[in-house]
Structures are given as C-alpha cells and as structure tokens.
Image (cartoon, rainbow, N blue to C red; front, top):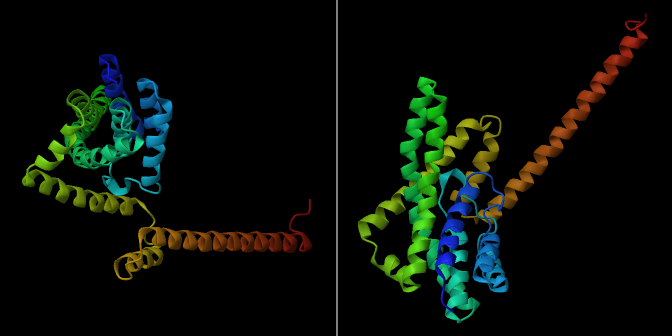
Length: 267
C-alpha cells in the first residue's frame, strides 16, 4: 500500500496537534493509544493503529515529564509505527520495532524545542514588564510553533523518505550534538525539580523528602518502589490529618458545652 499525499499532510498535522494538546488542553492526555487510533483512522486500518498504540502505551505507564525531563515520545512513534505497519504489509511487530527508535529520536528534538522556547519566554517577561498584554498573548502563541515543528517536521520527512531515514538519522547524528543534548537533557530535570521544590511546602515535609532521597540514592530502590513508599507516607499523613481534625472538633465541642453550662450562650 502506498501512502497518499493527503494522508501525509493529515498525519503531519496530527503530530503537531497531539504535542500541542499534551502541553495545553490534554484532551487526548498524551497517550500513544489515541495517537495510534487516529493514525489508523487516517490510514484506513484502525485495528493496526489500536494494536500499535496499545503496545506502546504499556511502555509509558507511570512515565511523566516531571521537572522538565524529556522522555521517549511514543506518541509520535505510534503515528510512524502505524503508518509503516500498514504500508509495508509486514505486520504490527514491524511497526512497533520502528516506533521505538522514533520515540528515542524525539527525546533530542524535545530538548531542542524546550531550548527554543526560552527565547519566547524572555519576550513574554519583557512584555510583562511593559504591561504589554497583546505582546504577552502573541509570544505565548509563538511559543507553540517550535513544539509543533519538533514533531511535524520529522514526521513529514519520515513519511516522505521512508523508514530507512530513521536509522540513518539516529546512526549519523554527530557526537557533539548528541553529547550536548544528553547533557542538557540531564540538567533540565534537576532545574525543573529545583523550581518545583521552590513552591512546595518543603520545610513542612522535609523528613519525607529526605526519606525518598535516601531510598533512591543510597538504597538504589527502583522508582516504582519509591513511588510505593511515597503512597504509604501520603496515607500516613492523611490519616494523621484526619485524627488532628477530629481532635479539634472534639475540643471545640467541649468548649461549646462548657459555655452553655456557664450560661454564656443564654439570651
């Protein structure tokens, strides 16, 4: 099966819309399964799109871009995997095998998109100082352009030149570029987490933060185990808050009763 021009255009637009959705409205909630289904509709094979997207969905369960981190973009991978699974006639396994390197390639482009948006963020800050509301709105909208291009451009190139272009790009990226992007990708989560800690009630829950750090850094507990530990501590904190609230209610009720006995509330 040969891919049609209108399908290439539709899939390119779809890749841009999905990344815009993931950083704004989250209608599709940035799920590969939805990307696979939509790509399957465009390609006329919803079953294949669903199978590819659902398989990739299992690979991102519990994975999030917290703290500014970049993770493999299996949403774009689901689009490309669905397309070549349908057009090549080699089945779902072939599409999934191609989707994985595509998702890994998108990590580097995701970092580039984040860097590019720093320019527009600075323009927004300057517009805020001038109280230029039109400038703020305009530059916020300009900021979505790099995000859209970071997905739409590679999808368009891959659909035009075929699946071999993916391996060519991945294998021939210069070491200075991949090294720089890896360093940047490692710094972004640290910076993002530092920003999050700036606005979280760290002083109140410093003991929980230290427990989590100790578990991850010194005990080498996997992140899933740290997450379970976090849930357990959250449950303990929640129950303690309930007990404290009940004590306050009982204390207030006691004060009210004493007031009635002393005649303080009589007319």
